[in-house]
Image (cartoon, rainbow, N blue to C red; front, side, top):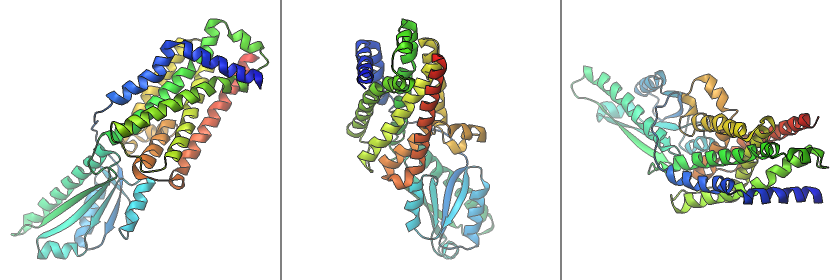
Length: 368
């Protein structure tokens, strides 16, 4: 244990002596979180929605059929009362609920006016706004269709309500995504060059003949970056709260635990890259190109996963950032607890154990 602790101290000394590493570790996250303050608009397809039909007459059925026939929406379930709305939103799969008022058809004929409430999950403001616009467009086309054959036009009045982000602040979308990107890239990139650096400096032989076992070397390389990455995560959350006014509706303790799990996941992935790379340059390229593009494009940070082709949706499920973004949005914006995000948590833990086990296996092969 004394040798192991000495090895960890040595790793800390190496990190603090390297000014470029410190800049990447602490400078880049702060710069990115400050610069990513803009909204990114995108189209949506196959968005999962729910229907609350209090009227259940011919007119509402026709409108529901029009909505389900479009490529924009997929009706996942029909609910019976308004108390179910918050529950299905907290689960994260349903992005909007269409609420038809009671006696919809009668009011449309008698008063020439009936209303539909569009309730959207605004944790992603761009998607919420797009859902509302697409729904309004479908309703307007239906309204034009039925008004052709009557003298007094009927009027359907949609009423939109955004939950979790009523002001549609884009910062609520990009902060969880940027936090994920920073922790993934910085953690993985810094650890990916750790073992390859030993190879290039000629000190790998010392590790190979040292009494330290492979798992001790792997853990010793990861431990210093765990503490430094936790500091990064705390800085990002503080900047989000005090500068961008990002709310944290859920437990800060749970947010911290989930962030530590994701940090260890990213660090173990970086170590795995380090064990299979011969040079620091190779490790850096794999970290940047192999992680940055998938994390940005396929994790759901910018583009909705449901709108992607099915092969890409499958690939997105093996990207740890996908699950961490769901966890962040759930805790920070929806205030959910572990009872809701337990599945995503278990997936991250399983991925972490897999990366660590594979890293140790690869390191053993090099010892032989």
